[in-house]
Image (cartoon, rainbow, N blue to C red; front, side, top):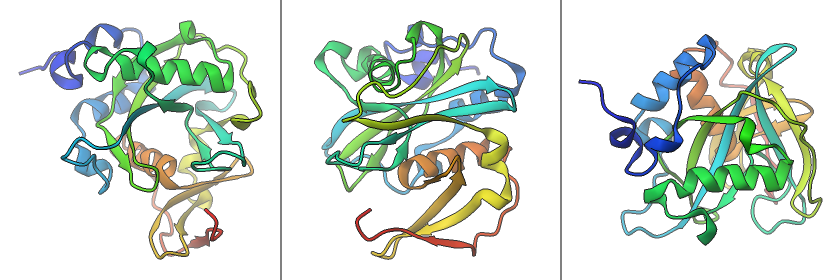
Length: 234
């Protein structure tokens, strides 16, 4: 039986999700979004107590000169949480966004992306939402919102106090085994990393990209013994 968007994504969100007219190459990502389980994405899941600050990120797929690409940004080095890290645009749910039950997290992802990168939300078609994940170090409960950049708009740093750089990364670079490694934190934990666009993408962002590539069937075999150390301040 085919489930409705409300059954997959929750009450109130189906009306904000549109899968019509997506490019064929996004079909595997769309299928993965509707079938993947939280534990398949991460071992860090939201606390059963309901603790954690609700937030969302925009996982935005566009099409550039080298084919499919993802929009990323580098957080300002002065920020309190995850300073200097490459990430998806996004941030915490604000009262103006509504509630998680009425699509507030989708609106939060678009609002934050506009504030951080200057993109025009009108050109973004939301086609899915991944299960909520958890970032223990900052206490955020994060919903990855999947978008198709149907009508690209200019992007760049809006507020240097929040964003150091805005850039796109071809999916071809993310799947290239030469650009993949395992990031090892001084505290001992390790996770996937991507060395792309003069940046080391690791942590939550790299984990979501890694799982999307895997479940979309885009992943290529890579050397998991190749390690890159992280700075102790990370």
